[in-house]
Length: 391
Image 1: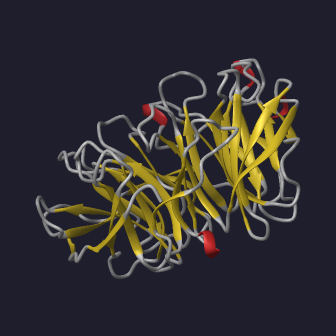
Image 2: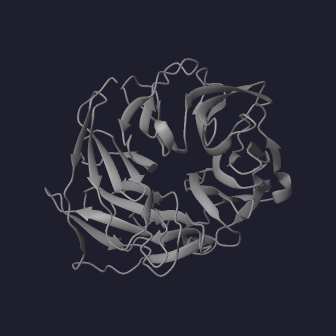
């Protein structure tokens, strides 16, 4: 390893807030008309300056795109289009694969189908919400037996188009790069590292060379943990370098400045063990691990995000949970200044929702504070967002 890992346990006190309104936030449904919404990925696909969304509905077997309707209608169901129908989709992400200016969608399937699909967008922007104008094809070159979990568009070294980095789970699982050839007509699979169960793939310059490295979380088996890989030469990636969490079931991660010291840190939700913060301690890739337990009456950790929720200039933590029936599935934690004492605040409440998923912090209503975007799979709350009351 090129850095040492320091482990410390943050002895924190999690309290209920009594100084601010702490009831559940108002929930808005973007779409609740299919089954098993499984992760939401944002991108401004129509260039109006607002985030649009895509997601796969695992049980419903559909991939959908949602266009932000503007602030007047943002609390209503959003305009949507079903861009394709596949079996057991686990992930969907935007990417203009063929460089025609229209933003396509890549979906990943982990069930019996076990394929990556490209949902080709219509070239005319006026047809973007026309389901019949979309075309779905298996991505040629993807390994045919892997249970695909997550994909990350990756700019090519020659700046001519986009490749894909995709990760899988189960027997023979790996993270690899799908290299585009012949204007997205052919793809070559190049394995990067063995895996157990990939949860997150993120791009971040960890080693400070001005080029994006690959950061990922692997939740199962002998390869579990949070790692980074030097991708300066994508044809010859470096070996995986441990950031932390090698003895824990790590879930979705986030990369942000946790302690406002100007350095990017890594946070990851840990199933049944709360939140693991890997705080960067120097310009070199050295990290100190801080374990933060979840409050009582919550489910198991699924996703975490770092962001200033109450607009006081101090980073807060937002987390989501699975196995949260009659428990709190989405909450946020604030920290007292110069203290390790955390205060827990409601977002979802404990009445609705069982299995919440990947979180996004975005000011969807454009009122100046961060709202919480996620999806819920078991109660079929669907693709939802919680309106931040801070203003």
